[in-house]
Image 1 (cartoon, rainbow, N blue to C red):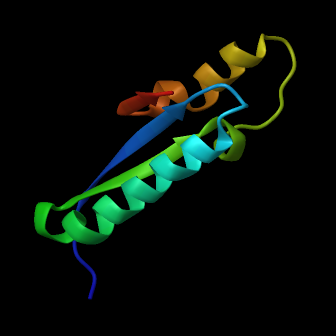
Image 2: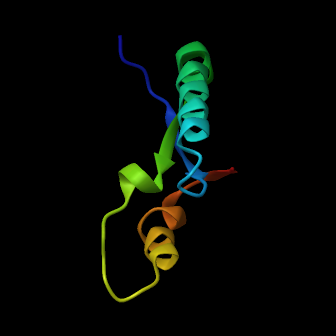
Length: 79
């Protein structure tokens, strides 16, 4: 059954060499959602540079990521 909830975009910020750690963080967020999202009416949506950004020209890679996804996130987890 559907339910209303507030969605928070959670940016997982890290260098490229910690893919397994980013995966663990995503799994923990998904588990939190499974246990708590309905009762708290909150959904945490994991956002990462590797899946939510696209190539552009004209700015540094970090600037592109910041403009495309970081500016739209509510929370940040840094690794």
